[in-house]
Length: 121
Ligand SMILES: Cc1cc2nc3c(=O)[nH]c(=O)nc-3n(C[C@H](O)[C@H](O)[C@H](O)COP(=O)(O)OP(=O)(O)OC[C@H]3O[C@@H](n4cnc5c(N)ncnc54)[C@H](O)[C@@H]3O)c2cc1C
Image 1 (tube, rainbow, N blue to C red):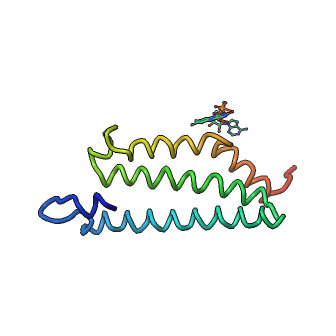
Image 2 (image 1 turned 90 degrees about the horizontal axis):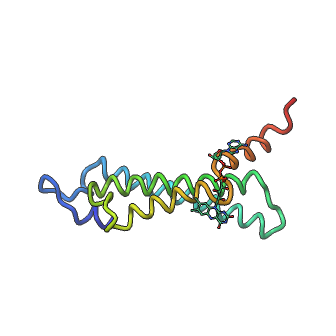
Image 3 (image 1 turned 135 degrees about the vertical axis):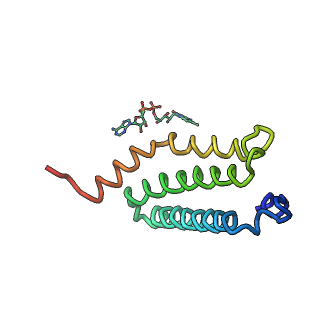
């Protein structure tokens, strides 16, 4: 966000380009959706209504959102985003790790599907 407001290309702040502003709108929306999902899963757990399907959704989806958002942040920052001197490339690696530890995305989807479909013969 800070970079999009500051960086100029073709005499315009890049945040004024619709393609960039739409990325930021999508990133903020995904983050909000992921946050609400985590809060719902945590609320259910706190109230003794833990739902393994929702827990797996709340592990996989926000981790995937973090990867998507960090990837778009790198894109918005162009070559600067790719350099180790900037923290967004580390955010991308950290986010990718979250899709692996504490249950990979494949395993979370297995759990979601198992609760959706039940035992199939
Ligand atoms: C940043 C980071 C931090 C970590 N921190 C810790 C930690 O603090 N403590 C700890 O104990 N471990 C930690 N780990 C290890 C992590 O928990 C394991 O890497 C993870 O559980 C996956 O196990 P694995 O690497 O053996 O992959 P594997 O189990 O060999 O899986 C390899 C691939 O096959 C897929 N796969 C496996 N089984 C199935 C299946 N039945 N159906 C579909 N796909 C399947 C997996 O999703 C994955 O894509 C960390 C890993 C990372 C990346």
